[in-house]
Image (tube, rainbow, N blue to C red; front, side, top):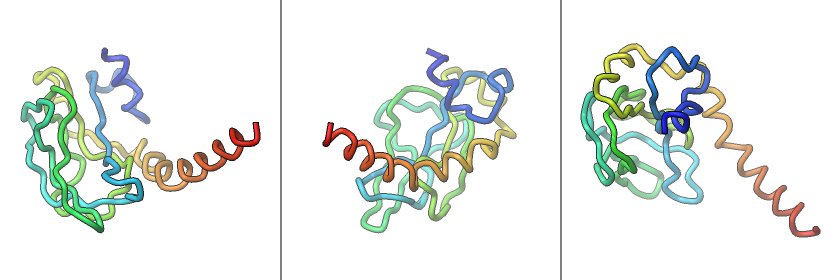
Length: 139
């Protein structure tokens, strides 16, 4: 199971931090490109279970609760309440399976992985999807 979390630690050596999952800004609609963090509903060290609301996310159309999909503990909040124009795919929070691992993320920053995460969801998926469809259609 920890192997699945390792790629989420992009830009950081695997040994620097315990096994963790980097949760990114979700796309709450097909056209969503950025969102705002209205307010976090969790704090560092909080236990999360599926269905627990992590934060409220504002889009241009609505404000919705972002729910956890798995069990774990909040190890780091990478943004603050009111963070604006967070790109879909941009890092928001770090989750760990073991509460004892939470202190290891006290000074965690996703800077090495952030530019790629911010740039990738905005343009390449939109460009790649039509190209894939165009290639698949004639074939």
